[in-house]
Image (cartoon, rainbow, N blue to C red; front, side, top):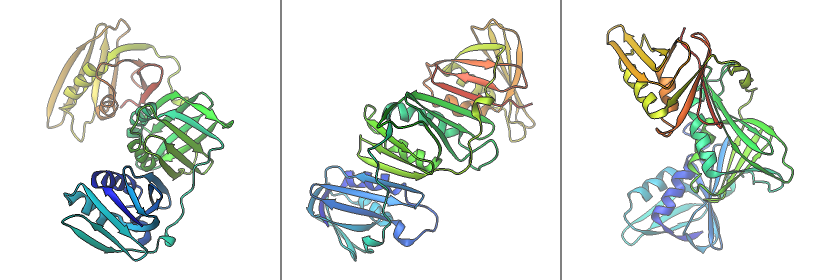
Length: 367
């Protein structure tokens, strides 16, 4: 294959595709990107056998059709350091060359026939969501994913698809984030559920570049495929094994207090009070009274803090303790002007933060 490539466009595509290359020791062939150039299109592919991507490269002029393996790390380093606006990329089963007016690089490579095939997206049955909506849902849940699997925690985001909506849920056992948005179906696609790994979710988010573009989702019992129309990418991932915890059972049934809050002022108060927490005392005490919230923290060696926040609250007094990091993690991904409601039962029960009808965040107290 041989192609004339805009350097920035090729670099962006290689960096995006290389996110599917494992950082762990894998088969040497999987450290490469596979390029397939046909007519006026070039497709890059990468996989670690658990996660994979097929991505169209924009602005590339194919001079000779063909396919080849491109050493990912070396190629990205060359493209990052090169100064030329356009480069010629030429490769076959044995070597890969990158040339510009003042540079020339040659690298050994492997036979593209040794690279595993990636599944293709089926156009028969799928769900569809707008990219902007999906990106927001991912940002609102991905931070709550657990680093290790446990009884009430999984290392991925739970997807729940039906004919009108998509719901994403993530939990690490101490907090739970739920985001939902509108969805449509094609070809009579049925309602499906599955847990998509954190790495696949992060790669999907990076590919959602056009807010208005549709994203197609094909979910099966063992794997998921996403097709993003904005940059013509197909992302493949195996699902996390195991059953996701029954998350609806964790929601408080009858809150006794509903506290109206604004994200910006509440976040500032929590961060101010948290200055005096330490490794031993990772808690802030929240004292809700009429018209006021008082936040207090005290570390064994750091000192103490007291922050007051005026509220439009007329309910009963309530005291509860939270790890401030779990609140700040959520508050930083919302617009500061967003209005929300903090639903509480008592000092020993989980609290629920709601921003509109489409986002809920459950957090366990420290007792």
